[in-house]
Amino acid sequence: MSTGTLGLRLGTPITALALPLFTSYYSLLAYRVISTRVGCGIFVGDKSKSEAKSSQDQTPDPLTIAARSHANFAENVPLALTITALAEINGADRNVLIGALGTLFLLRVGHVEFGLRRAAALGPGRIIGFLGTLGYLVGMSGYVAWLTKGYWGY
Image 1 (cartoon, helix red, strand yellow):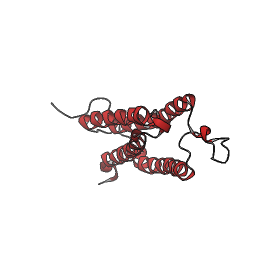
Image 2: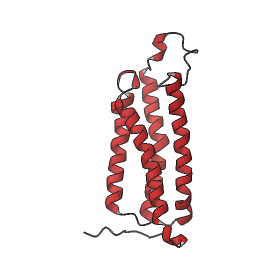
Image 3: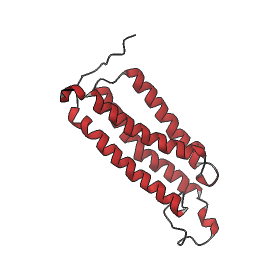
Image 4: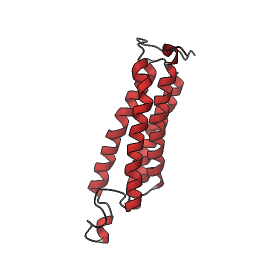
């Protein structure tokens, strides 16, 4: 079976070149939030320990977990799918994209079901899903830039 591309074959070399810059900065901002959470000992929500009224306030409530699960998905998946669509438009191998999207789906499900929904919202799926998603974003954006290297004379 051919791994060639189908569709309009519209290239997006300018956007492709910018993708690694934007997704790397996005990843840095996300990393700063996580490292600040770890440093402050606040793993869900936005209240510092000094604002919490008791140790019970450190246990995230089900609504906060559900809202953060939804928001985190909404923050990351549209960007990931946009980057993946740009890869596809620029001639990415379909098998690479199928494998990458399958992996992304597992990472996102793992982030919630084996991370946020575990005791104290600290299951191992949370860090794996977070780091894996950032890796996906940066890696896929780099792949898109690489796919358009011919446009730039390389």
